[in-house]
Image 1 (tube, rainbow, N blue to C red):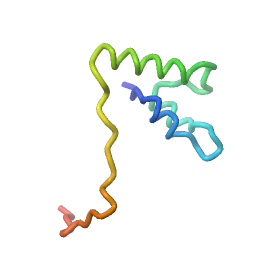
Image 2 (cartoon, rainbow, N blue to C red):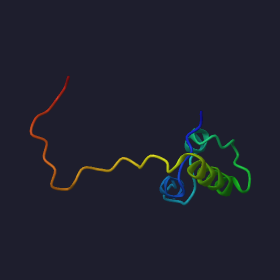
Image 3 (cartoon, one colour):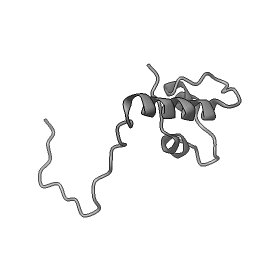
Image 4 (cartoon, one colour):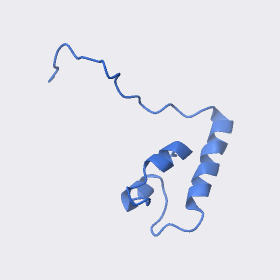
Length: 75
């Protein structure tokens, strides 16, 4: 099942040249080559999913800059 990205996730996945990689689009269920309007369609589907089932889960946050791990776990 394809991942349904938020508009922020779509923008964050751009390459430095401003495009998206084929593998990333495949994760989202966008066929290659992407058709015109693919981004708007993903955003519409994401917004519809929010209305139907509440907000999507938040993105994982990075550790605070002052975080220090006391032990290493190689378990």
